[in-house]
Length: 347
Ligand code: SIN
Image (cartoon, rainbow, N blue to C red; front, top):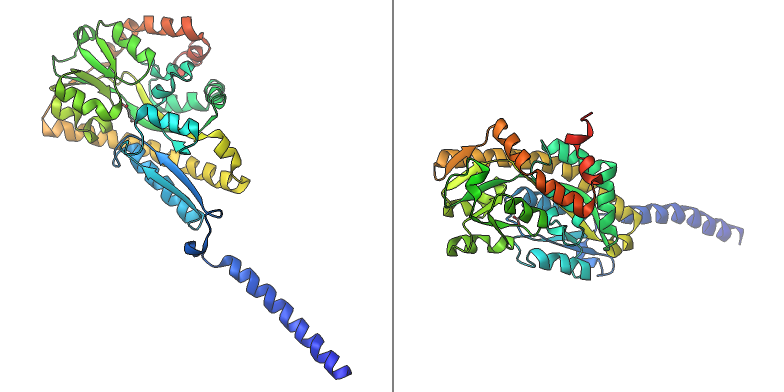
């Protein structure tokens, strides 16, 4: 009897550590995703309107890859580029409805919802991308992002497209007066419309994925965009003149549906936030490099006549656009303008 108790005790002592070790190892095994139920997997649908080879398209892919790798495949970010799932306004509506979970719209396209955001659209609001980043991280920038929360949206990151340039088919734009009478495509932003009213041009709000056709049909004669967008959508093949004006910023907020975001576990939120932070740094550099590269390619192809505004000319343009700043102040106050880096340090 005593012997059999000894044997049982011995087996027990041997088996317990073995089971503990085996269980801990099961946890560390790479997960076979086929075995994960729908409830265990997390799918995030991410819609955007530009091409894959743009600063936004490439960053979206990198973000999806990193999240997949870091979550051992448990979190899948499905990226739908080129407006294949939703176009400009549709994607915001789909996010608000909760049909998709993530978008990265141009900030200008959020200004119907939060008009104060159109401070980003003011002509020559920023002297450099560093100023844009500084403003976005400042108290004023955080206040702007908080306004999005009232609409059940949360902005977790800023991605650059870069500074916009002007192309058209009518005449070289060397002076702002040259814009007179030209039908220009703009994004959905009243401040962008004001910018063109001031120079007696005719702004038309047109969805990004329709611009090429509208240029081709002659509904519009010109447009403003970053070089990566102008080249990736081939706009320049339909235009005779390009002005390197750097007159306005085009960038994106990475926007989650807030209810969805709050439904995630702390660990998942931390993983996504940290990864986005890392991708943002990488994306800023990429946007700068790609725009430089595209300019070089356009110069080399000699397929469009290019005019470069001098620093002096840019100052003249900026001054001429002062009424647009007044328009903003009258409608949305002067707090955000006062906090633009270009004014902040002026005594
Ligand atoms: C984008 O870069 O997402 C599109 C910008 C535009 O509509 O011009």
